[in-house]
Image (cartoon, rainbow, N blue to C red; front, side, top):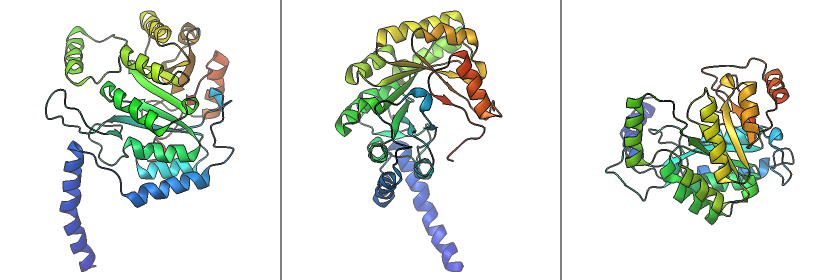
Length: 296
């Protein structure tokens, strides 16, 4: 016991130093961990989890969290046919504006230090045969995301590229602050980012996530204009808690409708019945409803 305690004490400074290091420069995960997950992805692949060429969006079973090794392992062992990773540039604290040459990593929050690099995540995802959804948290990461997807030869038919759309609605002071931050960090996904992704992957599904949950007519109109400008298959990703029949009908003429929920704010209870209710409203895209935060 004493030996184990001393070992933990010796490891703690190393672990703390690693977290500080990764906050600036996020390194790769240990090779045995990644190699083991690649092998597990191959072994768990099956007809039930494979993303085929005729995959319908209403058949998608999305593993919402696969940023960490434990989450990815849970997804590979589950009955999912799509893996979702949050992607951003490494280095939560940027030494100066315009700082580049940072790897793309899987991390929902800016302070996370235990995710994959995008190369590692793509290795595992490609071996799994599942669909691959990238939730882009920073527009500044888009050029490198495109480069790595091309380098990895990801089949565009298996690819969903999701980014946030700033639909406005903020108070004037907050709007000025957000605009100033975006000029420096390019944290928003711009229309130019989306059109660059479409040019690189004509067959990929581009998913637009509005920056607010409650959408008015003007905000729906902006989403529709962006969808038209992007072209190709487009999906609108809406917060189920605030999705109305009017919103579905407004946007459905311009793309597929997908739904998600944050179980910390709203739980559907009976997921199957709630899903069917939204299907009856005309929701034809991915419905990703959860009563608990999965794969943590």
